[in-house]
Length: 495
Image (cartoon, rainbow, N blue to C red; front, side, top):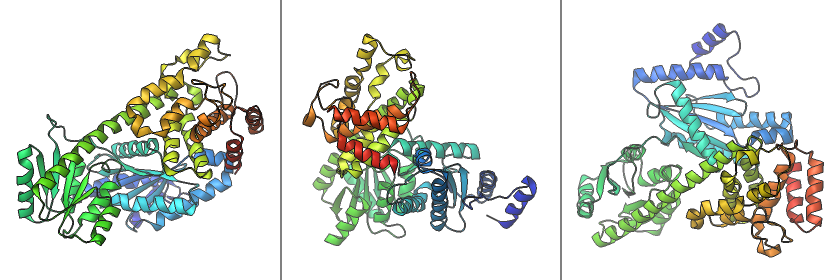
């Protein structure tokens, strides 16, 4: 940012344009710079991206570790941000634990690279203890005014949080609508003859073929249109097929589009490079028509199935948030439970699939409460027998709601149904005992109880930690919950 803008700000506002703690620009100067950059981009016809970076679960970190350590983390992350952006870019402290970046002459696809570097640097710096989520939006593609651009970046950030945190997500624009369900295939090749050949093979099967002659054009098409498959040449001038594939697979909104590398290279090294970039399949030039059409049909079917499952999953996550909105005392409960459950899973050396299921199960475990009235959820006194019966039915309701995604959710289904089971068989809804209850479901049960004890409820204030540990240990002595899990949770929370 130009020197005279700094001077003008300081003179007009009467305060420094930097944040005292992090050394980055403050929010006021960021707002002024964003307006200025929009005006400059309008004059020169250039684009830029806005990134909002939020420290995951920072309120809990602040509460547990104290303000001194929390401020130290803020300062370290600010330093990592500055070391991973260009001099022409701008970084500011947008709010308490949120940073804002203005990345000049950069679209959202290109902005994924520096923001992903920052995410990895923060994770490495803290050995996974601290993570960040990032939302991206670009000017003028996503919005043409400052307020709208910030809103779009905030929406993308929210999506990154919902999808599990510790990730970069860019704003998903409304795509071009089509009146039919004709599969859409993007063919990318810098040689016009190859484009015509592929189109001639695909059109008889009534596919809609979109063509691009380079990597940049391919990414532009993907931003504007829903696609079912991408057939892409590897060796292209400028951005090669590997880089385009890496960018597509690195984005939450495009990673499920199947990418087939069409290449004259038939050596193992080239295929390994394609696999690392995220390619779904390979076809050797010149393509065999029978092989091309068979693989195309198969991958399009997979894409359509994934689209259906992803849509259902998004609805489930929205329902989970709706449940929290019904009960003012449990807002943030699912996020806290998911975070603690994942931390426990890592500490107890669970596999990657189980840890991923703990995150999803943490978000969805109370989804069955969508069928419980607000009067019962927010009742200030003890529940009567009938109200208790209704509450105890929520794991079964949640399990039924999530059944369409049973194959995708996998072990998370078990946690949704069994997070209130007890080792002695006194839990619900199935009265399972001991080894009948999975390790992941036992973790979910302990974390769910702990969070319920230490947070405010309609009928009581949150307990002190010591009293909560006493209750948990008493439950363990009675053979109801897993003592090993309680001890591991205590180490995490106390740390």
